[in-house]
Figure 1 (cartoon, rainbow, N blue to C red):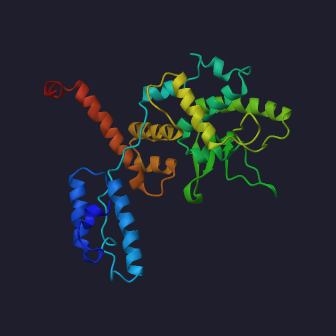
Figure 2: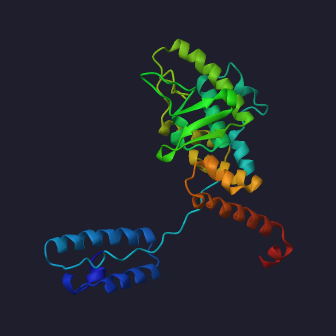
Length: 287
């Protein structure tokens, strides 16, 4: 890796322009920005070591930056596919929400509905309590307020926000809460505060939620890989498409900067471009 930069010269002959030329050449040859950044990091560490040993006066890689990494657009489901993802197994929803449905069926349906309805991060979802609790032993950081049809979550940096919960998600949560109460009565050692419980009693973990979302996507015929953050992206993209209110979407997502939320405007343009390509006569003739 370092031989490409130094060649036959001594380490002490390397200057900042040499590093910049290597970065430019690597970028022209198609080396990924992340790979260039890793190599620059390795060089900085190596040259720092030489400088500390007295062999170099300055680090020639210290002031060189890697090319900017391309910004990846978040993956969002189309509205039709999102509806397929959150639809209960039975066409009329009776199977998923029936009192006789099992523990995991009701819990998983409530989870997928809430993720799409409120755009929660995975950490926010698993941190929810069934209601606000404040005791000497426990204080809720996030909770469901069923009477207000909303969840209060503690996001990144401890920033708290309130997010509404839609009617289908509330129905799924009501069915789950009834099952949860009956289940807790039979399992006194389970976590009494957590909104979503594992079948063994503790609060449901992040990896378990990722697995169940992936499994539900396969079972419901969603033609792409789905993880919890895909539902958050879908929530934001669909809300922005319908409302056009970027500031409101920012508040609901809990983004500190609106620049973070603006990526969803690119998703919306992609959708419009796809409609144009499929429908406009000139677009068809161009293809």
